[in-house]
Image (cartoon, rainbow, N blue to C red; front, side, top):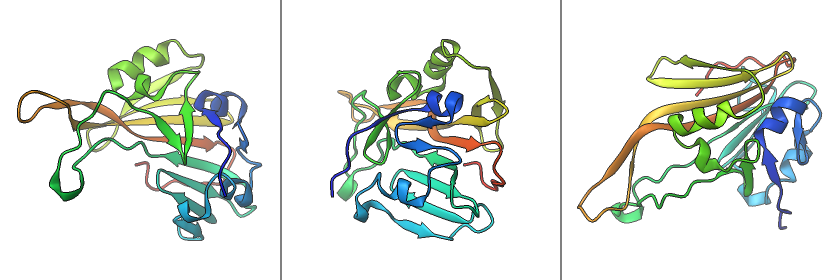
Length: 196
């Protein structure tokens, strides 16, 4: 099975509650499963009972459902380049995309590179519609949260270093890099214990 390409927009989830074929509070488990090839789903069950009645995990995203088995929240986990196989270092080539499975994710039409580091993201967020707040976490992390009475959209940034291509033996870019994105239905009886 091959999944049809879709481009999701995070600000559509925040403003309207849906983007592409996903709608908070309405999409069921089969609707999420249909976004992935069967082998890409790592977990499909009641594994996080304290957080939700049902969870579906894929390599870079997690979906949480309530007792009515409707989507109440999901988390996207961007991948930054780390150490390659066999100990070889992967160097960041200056490109960065956010994915939901194999599908591209944007924010008000902006590409993932605009959200990669906190300074760039703050410039992008200033140009987006919606009120947002900035707060610090417990582990040198920073949260940017868009919130309305119905939904919230949270970007988590962590201090990190990324190896970059250089003529020298080693070079790293150090910044607050995007580590996760949460989209939540505020009306859900979803209790998140771990904001990471």
